[in-house]
Amino acid sequence: MSKCALIMAGGTGGHIFPGLAVAEALRERGWRVHWLGNAANMEGKLVPPRGFAFESIDFGGVRGKGPLTLALLPLRLLKVAGLACGLAASVPTGARGPWLALLAVIVVLGVTTLRDRPPLLRIALWGALAVATLACFATVDAFRGRFDLMTADLGGFVGGGDRDTSPGIRLQIWRAALLAFAERPLLGLGGGGFAVAVDQYVSSGVLSPLAAEAARAEMHNTYLAYAADFGIGGLAAVLAVFAVPAWAFVGRLGGDRLGRRAALMGLALVTLYAGCALSVDVFKLKMMAAFYAAATAFMAAMAFGGSGRNGPPERVEGGPAPRRTS
Image (cartoon, rainbow, N blue to C red; front, side, top):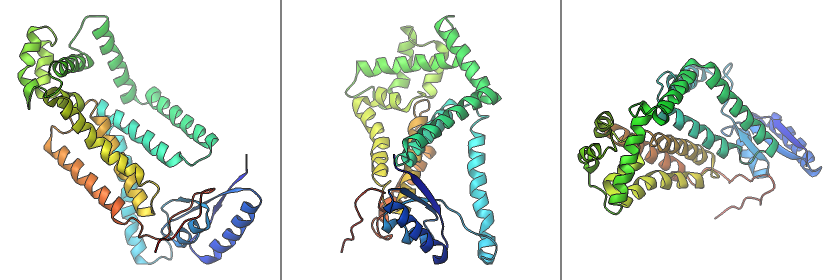
């Protein structure tokens, strides 16, 4: 296995060009060289065309950078605080959908950002993530309490005959939705048809009265909701709503800096909604549907609008040299 070096230099030519000289010398000796810098600065324009793997982070100085930089510092801190508050706020809610979606987003971000890293580094980072997740479940009361409650509810549903636990109600609704889909797989029951057919499933014993009341309000699964009401066409449509933009965003992960960032944000958004859809009817509220459509379109415009216009393409270490098009 070849040796790997990380060079951290940027900002001015006095730092970058000596670093490039060292990087070239190391590469001639068989080293794999990665460069850590800010893609918005000079190193972002000089390093990638020379064929070095460029690892970009958003950073900058504060002192001596003028009043504008100092004025924008609170905004940068606000972005970090907003992310931390958003993650922290999802914990005490006890909602399974956001927890599941957050885990899916972490996996997607990990896969997309670590795919070019050495195997040992990827194994170490995924192992650290697994340990951190287990530590959260073991130490955070909200996680542990919710997990214990779910375990007790499932035990009561499976072994104790209590159908009306929280997961038991969902399982009843999902079973009824699958039966509805099996009865009319092509066209479904029609818009709002499952809510009308709930009484039929109560009479047959598929749904308890409490589960029927919950089913009239929400299916608790976007995929089954559209499959029951609109058949295979509805199921294909809701899958396409997530799969098509996800596929498009994945295709832009290797693009220019702006397109790559927008594609990664768009992929995280789509994954978040697709994960929540497993336990929530995410499009039942018009506000959620409107936000998904607007945010996905905005990220797509950013990811594809500047394609090919933000400087030369980056060359991945060991790959072909970038080609300029006239």
